[in-house]
Length: 256
Image (cartoon, rainbow, N blue to C red; front, side):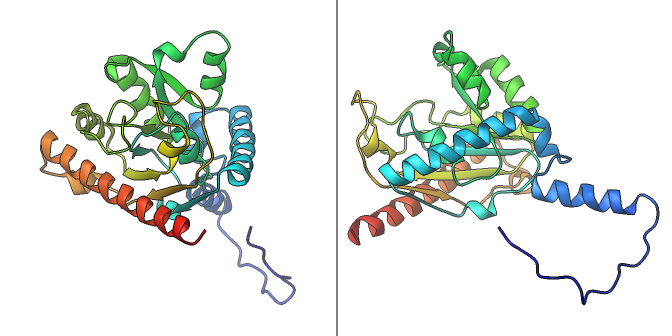
């Protein structure tokens, strides 16, 4: 956390017009994702505090047991709706996507996971259900609602966990969602979570993890594109982010 030094030699601020200080405070809050920003309206203060606690505990435990590093996360927009799209390797992916970010994530989860007790836990950290076959009308509506409330929503556009660690084809519905949302899209590459807990193994095991937040796709970048071109661009940027994560993981492993 940055600190400022003593202000004894600082000139007194010039008088401001009525309301100017409040407006400046709101602008700074929006920039930093504070309580007055659109970011803060995607969940209650109590749920934000609960999410922060879960994120803090998960970050410490995973750092001690697994070891993880992240790059590119400081370029993620600090306020407003953002769509994170990531490759999908493990049940653990959504936890690692959120650890490097100060802003809380919203994420989609299979409707079959919303059973008693587990459903309450998933919802408390920003999860909401979709059908396994696709995001569907209700999932689309809820995703757009949370984005328009200034939240970050995480999606795995492959639609399912990878069977072998490779990046599979993206579902074409991602382009429709991106067009309708009109928010920045941040591709994220994960490496190492497949080795920690692939879908073929019942229990996880230790392995280093790398997360790379790639080049943001802004709405203006998609002007004039059809859905196929949008899907191709997302796949390209997602592939770049994945390759960057893999290179980082290789460096981590080579120096150990």
